Image (tube, one colour):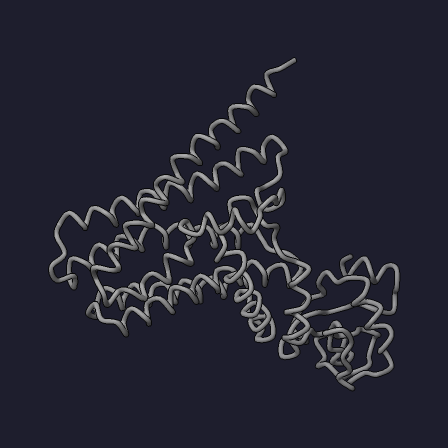
Length: 323
C-alpha cells in the first residue's frame, strides 16, 4: 500500500522509508501495513531511535524536508537497519527458476542480498549498484590484459569477477527493497550483462595471446566460440521470456520449479563458476582444460535448450491458432 493511500486512510500519517542519511530528501514510498502500524505505535517516541523487527523509527519530519526528529504535521520517518533490510529481503527473493544453476541460487544470491542491504543503508540506487558491478568486471578485464598470467593475478581477477556478479544480483534486490524497480533500470542491467558476456571471452583471447607462453593458436578458437555461445544463450533466454509474456505466460523466475539436483547439474553453465575458474589463471594448462570443458558444456546446453525453447514457442502458436 502506497504512502499516499495510507494517508487517505489514516490522514495524520505519511510514511518514508530509506537510510537515515537520506530520509529528509526522500519522497514517500510504498510501505507495508506492518511498517505503518510500527510508525503509528511509536509516533509519540519521535527522535528516540526505537527499533521494531528490523525497522528503525528515526523520528518525525515534515513534507517540507525538515530533518528527522521534528514532530510537525504528523509525518513519521521510518528507516530500515542493515540487518532489517537483509531480513526483509528473505521474503522478497525471485523464484528458483528451473534453469537456475547452483552457484547463482545458493551462493551469489545470498552475497547479493547482503550487498543490497548495505547499499540501501548507504543510500545507493539500483542503477548505482549496476555501475559498481560493471566497475568490478572492467577492473578484472584490465588486470587480465595488462598483468602477466601469474597465480596472484588469477586470484584478483576471480575475486573481482565474483564480486561483480554479486553486485549484479544486488541491484535487483535493492530495487525490490526500495519498493520496485523501473524499466530503465532493468534495461541498464541487461545491457551491462550483455556487454559483460560478450567481452569476457574476447578479453581471455587477448590475454592468452599476450601472456600465454606456449599456448598454440588453436586454443584461441575456444574463447571465440565461448563468446558466441554465451551471447546467444543470454539473448535466447531473454527472447524466450519476452515472447511468452506476450501470450500471458509467466517468466521463468515467476514459474519457479527449480530443484537442488537440477541446479547442481547445471553448475557448468553458471557464470559464477566461470568467474572462479580464473583462480587457475596462473596455471595456464589447467585453466585451458577447465575453461574448454565449461565452453563445451555451455555449447551442449545451448543446443538442447534451443530445441526446447523453440518447441515451447511453437506450441504457443498452435494453441493460439486453434478455434
